[in-house]
Image (cartoon, helix red, strand yellow):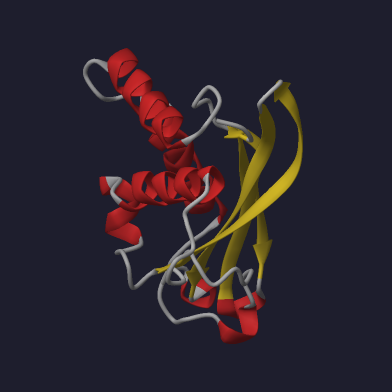
Length: 171
């Protein structure tokens, strides 16, 4: 929940659009129903000890340094750490291939291939991110998802994506 009177900055607007795009993807929604299976605003990374018994996604936004973009604006990277939890590994419910497939769906949220027409859909995704404050709307997958087995408890994958965000400093 937003603090009363606190204006939304470009980083938070871009992050919210990323969350919206991910949560409304049909394939991701099937595995991780929103909002119950999503932790997007508490800023806490995944912890096996407190993990739920159902698949869950944790998103953690991390702003990085900014540099001058022009005389009146700065450009900086917003990184979003993505953790997804696939529990009950001991039951053979999920495996590393499932984790790879989930990450590929995350990539296709921003660069769809199976939509007709795919090029127009990609441009629409970029434009919605640019409208929120992104520089180009292009998402870079800076850290591909890596799988970590949590024993019999399940499988956690961690990856990150980055996007450049522009902030105007003067009117």
